[in-house]
Length: 435
Image (cartoon, rainbow, N blue to C red; front, side, top):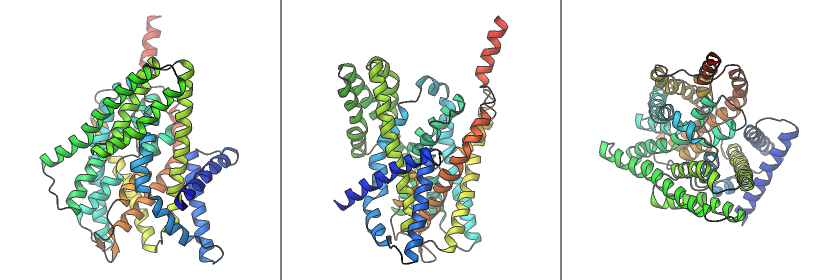
């Protein structure tokens, strides 16, 4: 029960920080909660070192029991992805399928290998040699843009529609592919697996294609069930079953629960919303999942911020964190610009497309959870546990991503609104010519 009480109190703190932000800071809620939790962690750590208040023992005992890896990967992720995908316009997603596909697959692979190569070179430069496969593992866990962080930050910024669909679509789909890449490299690094084409294809089919098929089945089943009832409460309860039992079923079957939730959410949001819900029910559906999404986002990013309490940072760790931030940003530039060298030959894009995609490629709790899934004691670098080093570097990238990138992308998006969408401008010109 102590863990349950801690969870309840942390939830209360996240709501309080959100309330305080509304009247004091007035920043984006996710940024405010993460920054608030970070400040709280620093205060608690400082008071502990002064001997005034010692909460380190409490944090060391309880935060690991909360287990961010399990809470996110096996719990919150299903709710947050389902809630985010409810608002995705399928028609716009279809129009941007090539862009989203290249960013989610080609971009993730480019970023993984660029991060791995640059990290390998940097660690050799500072006399901390690490096997290349471990550097690739870090590249795989940090390369996918986190759907939770991206959707939370982009939700109310009103970015240009074309760019917004690309950012949201990439973040929703590339985590499934990124987890497959991570699983393959993980098997090579720790299980002695061989990255053969049949093995990779089998894993991809099981994780990605299996998740998509399960999502279609779940979405189709609950579309039919919701259309069969006019009870508003029952309709909402049926949607609640999808990210609970549906996500759990995906984990049990060994397929991508993330992709299953995205696909089922798109079905419910695009088809069931119009055919199975009345206008009153549609409003209730949006309110219910917006509240759920905001609450879980706040709790998740509070946990990310408080994670600092359990870490004893050394001077060398700060150098690794700064280096990892620079490396990940360089890799993100490559991951966006290379696909768009081809894409820009096919159609016109918003002038701010590349800049928003690069700076909006946020990392969040998903990357941290993957880093924490690396087994402790499996490899060492100059006496330091590889898991500890990778978690520290991931934490630095995540904090920079949410606090710095997340807080500075709003002015970039505001400037982007001064330019009309290429296709919208072309349509307007055609209509004017007809007149």
